[in-house]
Amino acid sequence: MISGGQQRFNPAAAIENRDRFGNIFLPEKGLWMIKKERYQKMDIYLLRHGETDWNKKRLLQGHTDIPLNEKGKMQVDDTVCKLRALGVRMDAIVSSPLKRARETAEIAAHRLDYPKEKIVVEELLIERGFGEGEGMSLDDMKTKYPQDDCPGMESKEELIRRAGQAFQKITGVFYDAERILLTAHGAVLFALLEAVSEEPIPYTGRAACITQGSIYRIRKTDDGISIAAYDGDTGGFTELDADGIGRSARIYL
Image (cartoon, rainbow, N blue to C red; front, side, top):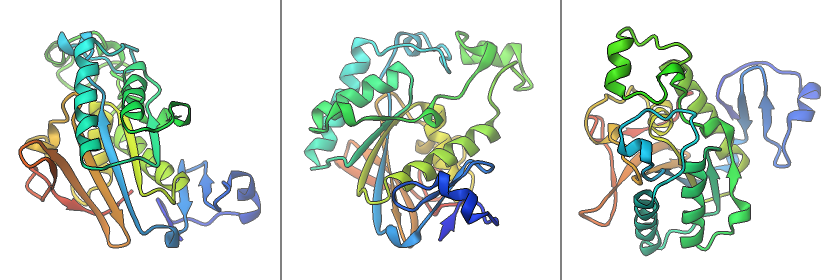
């Protein structure tokens, strides 16, 4: 078996936390222990929600529940149509609980012929909480809190750990899926890329620019993990390398 953290556990006590596939949830670690033999190849697509009115004003949203605006809906529709043109269909769609991500998931489901009622909401995919910084511009928050100590803001370390937990949980629950779509937010999706990467991803280059409606693909095999971004110039996915324009990676949680 593989797990997000090697530890001893009581099998009898774990029975209640076992899903129907035999995967075991360890509540004290917030991680799933997954049977390795279940994995062959899995593509996890990361789709950032489209534009909201707060995005347009460059305001931090965090947990504030703002819906997509019309431009945002068109952004998502355009991106998902590109996936459809590549022949991509989803075995599962998992969304953050916030409206902008759920609306993104519903648009994707419609375009990819996936039943909307089967969309799964995962709380671990919620956007980074910015505390008292929500509703402020990023520049204003940095000016007011230059030490990155905005009251109530989730730390980067906490965010990366949560994103890693989300990745392991989702790929465990949908262990037999070949393609999974996650609809979520810029900060948490970037943290997820960091969580599965061997090395920290620098906040420069393409990997740091998860724009509204953009999409990344994590390919998980027994040999490890690779990360790719959709390239509008080629009409396909370009694998990322170690210089921040991209990287190949393997899981480390």
